Length: 519
Image 1 (cartoon, rainbow, N blue to C red):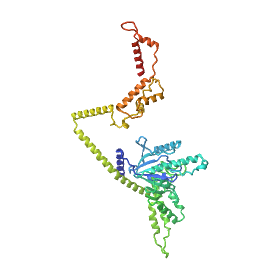
Image 2: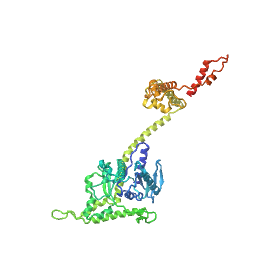
Image 3: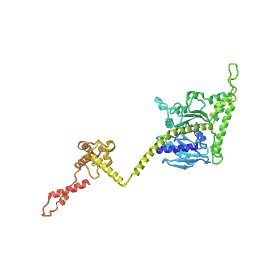
Image 4: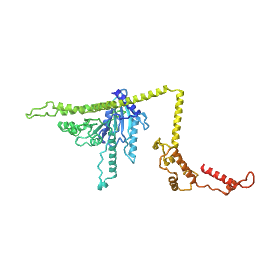
């Protein structure tokens, strides 16, 4: 399985490089707050990672790319930054990053959640080869009155309701990917009312991609007064009737309480801390065995059904019930089921992507062969001939564009006057060169005297429009001031007699003022 996972990741990377993207199979974990979702994810990973408890602990989806590595006695973690580069991090650093993101979004006045995933890759001896996406916990917000009674809701209720809608939209959008398996986490003893299932069905109406798991089984078993009640709960017939096409479940799980401590003992609240993650994994296995043992013991009390004569129809009713329900009890059973489904998704996607990559490989080989053939045929004379042909073709195309052509598409190569002004500037907006007309008059003159203002022109047509605009701008320039001193100095004295050449003086003044204005 590890080799399959590595090979699939390589294929996925190649598909991304050749712009043939597809989604890698993943398990999207969905559940309401305080449903045991984070604790369940930790148990599936084989080590404690998330913050657990009530409230919103995840405001951005966390994509956990888990890889089985028997050589890693402690979890080895990598965090992908916003620049796409993966960097090694400690568990503490990753937790601090997630907490910082939660604090940022909690203070954000516009939104409370962010759909961008936090990508974490993990290698550990207890990790399955799987991608888990931990989504923000759904919020069971009270209904806010609408209409005439809308004023009865206070600001806190409205804010909580808005956060609940935002979280639900984010989670539903994540579940819509057809390659994702949905793990629906519920903490309920009444199968008739499944609030999490109702949200999941917005993305997966028939639950054909959904696996249902009910958490905190160890706290529920003592609440059943009889073995028949326990059997009805484990059977979950109403779920089978409502969703006959569901992918799997319902599974039942228990996760031991307590956190892993670096130094054994108790935390400040007196809750036992496991010495290490190995103890946590062992406690999860013990909890599973304990649940299965208690259920098998309770089911022994089931009385066999009898026929009309009072004879039992099935003398092994307890054994039959145990065989039916126990395969769905425990984290190990859930994990094994998910690994098999993900493995199937991997194999299906490989069947899709391999032909695409093979076709791309064949296309690249053909192009490479054509390039090699061309390179083998190259010579100095052929290169010169090719350069001459390109030069002739370019000059011919340039001549056609100047004289007038419709060969080049105007939407690609043409520019309106507004686009032309935006890229190279305008004759009417030059610093130190004021115009004698207002901007409104200038815009009118552009339409009347320049023309083709909104047409996409290129080549000679665009050049001719620019010349007309230059001519208009020259005529609209504000005339420079000419002082008496400048007139007197321009008069000078002629080289043949001492009279004043007024025509020359006028030309000197005109040329100098024109040069200053146009510069």
